[in-house]
Each structure stands twice: as structure tokens, then as C-alpha cells.
Image (cartoon, rainbow over all chains, first blue to last red; front, side):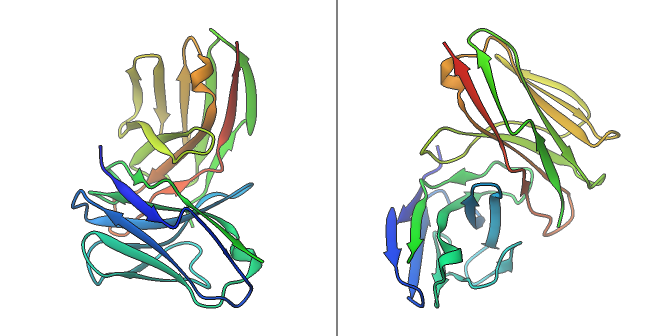
Length: 113
Length: 112
């Protein structure tokens, strides 16, 4: 099964802090995604990418930057973290954008105090 | 943004019973439909997909899709305690950049 690894597993920062969430997939998938999951909102897409150097805007991009440095690595950046960004963040990868299943990492729990 | 609505929000079923979950979508051009399952504290994992009208069965799980009524559903036969999880439905179109949109989810608890 496809392997998607996220780090860190847990992160606590303060308002205004700078946070980078990392994701690596080892199955040469073309697409990588960052989602946030919140009670009452489900999974919401922040940013996604279909290859190294590519970035596409998702449904809730405000306050987030992302960068795909290689086929394997996708990073999510919060440059001025706010309490509203406290959430569970999932990275995922897939071969296709809609007709292929997503493989999710185990998630990063971020708390912004 | 494409809209996906799930119902019910939660349900409790006795072990061995049939569980039925519903999903409605707003975009009639939707082509790809998936159900994901997320056990507590774990990552979501793809369960089943359907890409054309009708029914698809895999073991105890059956998906129905009716594009005309903008509705698809998941049915679990002989529900087990291990089926207790959050079930997420999702859809996507076939145009470039048409990404998956997830519903909020239905939380299922199967009581022994």
C-alpha cells in the first residue's frame, strides 16, 4: 500500500508563529494534497500539486502557503499562525486527481495558542 | 465550490443489522464517487468507488449511484463493531482541475 509520511505528529505554536508541516510519499504519485479536518466541516482542501514545482489552490487557501520541492515532498507553511488554524492536517497522494483513490498520511495535530 | 451533503450525521446500529448512509451532491457533471472510512484517531482510507449509475457490491458493502437524483449511498450488511467509524463520501468531475469534494461525514457506532 502507498506510504505517506507526515511530520511532526503534533505541533504547538503561538499566535503569529511560523510553522512548516512536511509530507513525503514514496510511491511516485503525481498528485499530493493538504487537507484540514475540523468537526462540523469535514475534510477541506487547502492546496494541492500535480508535480514538482506545481501548486494549485484548494478550497480554503487563506493563511497557507505550500511548496512541492520534489515528486516525493510537499510542504505546508503557516507564516503567521492564528488560532483559527488549530486543526488536524492530513497530507494525501494519488496517481490521478479524481478517478484514483487518495492515500492519506497519519495526520498532524496543530494547536495555535 | 461543489456541495456534498451527508445524512444522517450519526447513527447507532446493533451488530448484525444493515447500515445505510446517504450522500447528495449538487453538480450533475460529477463523474467519480468514493466512500472513505476513518476509524477513530486514524487516517481516512478509501473503501469503495463507483463511476457509473447502478450498484456495486464488495463483500458486505454495496454502493448505489443515481446521477439523475444526485444521490449515492453506502449500505453495510451484517454490521460489525469494527465498522464503527466516520464515513466520508466524495465526488469529482472529469474536467481538468476538478478535485475531490468531501462531505462532513456520518459517524457510525455498531453496538455488540
